[in-house]
Image 1 (cartoon, rainbow, N blue to C red):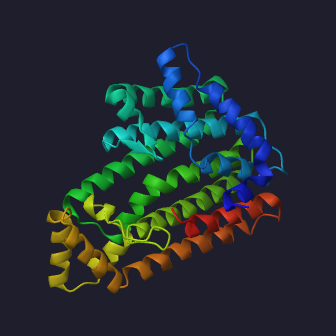
Image 2: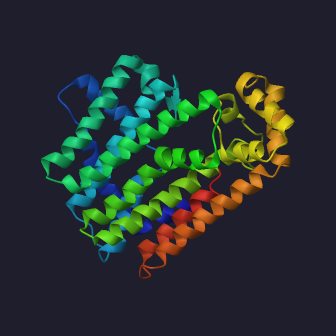
Image 3: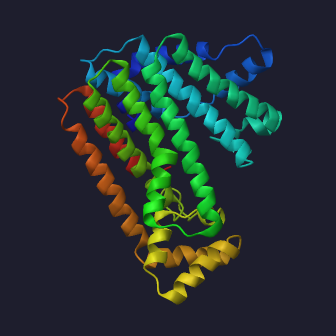
Length: 325
């Protein structure tokens, strides 16, 4: 059995019902919107985010979920999808999960409007049901994600990024949404405030480990084979690169920064940068950091009683850093 199917086992029924409710939450009177949202729903990924919501809710509430849990998962998925649609416009990207992106098929103007529509649908789903506590969780996440993206753009221009700034960026950009899923699951079943905060922290730790794993893919992996160097081409400062720059001699540091800044499209130069980062211990350092976040997340889970939901969450933590893509 695949790991993701194993993780899903204790929430299979909930995930099936969620998919129905999620499709319904997207319906509209405008035919074009329906055509586009149908396209979006049918090209869903692994749905890790709603899985976090249901697993956490069931772990906190003796295996039970409620209508708020379904709404919370839908809000997360609506807003996550909206951010992906907008990201593809911003990045001028034509593909998403192996399929054409919305902007590639329907152009930027429609993609932006669809993103706005999904965002408002998510907000209204909470407001119409007086789920203001859930709305606050997701609104904070959206604010942080925007701040993280802008901070990354600002730093990419100057390449003056420290490790502290890097962790700040990925905490906001990637980890905050997974943290919101976990807080949302706990809050939806009215868990105690300290549990909501503990599980938000749990999600944040996984999110950071998840992003470091993504950084490592740029330097090659047994499954992928060749290094991609895409982050270097896009002038993204990843943890292995930051470590290499911070621990290089002055001459090497100048060469590294110059390579990323001015020779990021030179394939040979990018290869040399990848080799330098590997030889300087950048990958080993990033792996050790990722493992630390993984261990901290697992430690937080241990404070909850043993259950199939806790087991699945542990599997999820390990899957995040062992995945091959």
